[in-house]
Length: 118
Image 1: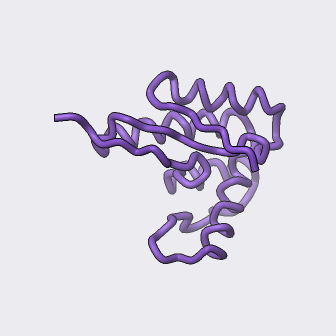
Image 2: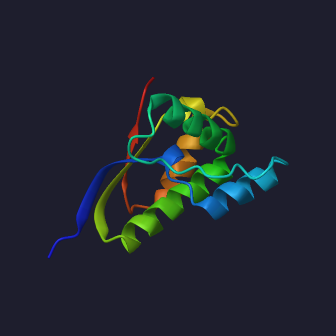
């Protein structure tokens, strides 16, 4: 039986709580708290959540870590076809190519990568 497909998983919307806390600590920031996206949360709440997660994903190492963890989490959920999307131009902690390369390194051939132009 084939696995599930997830063709719309956001890099900056899929941080594990412990990863978000660790990334915040590495930046000298307080624990960001609950960063879960839930059905019906509304646009303003979702955009505020994205702003908080995006602030944690400005460096290539953080992008690579989260991309790798997304692939691990998806596999554990039975997802065998995964596309991760993000807007690399919003990750200003390094040159654009370094951010994209970090995401590709984290994915390591386990998912597709969709780059969004905003």
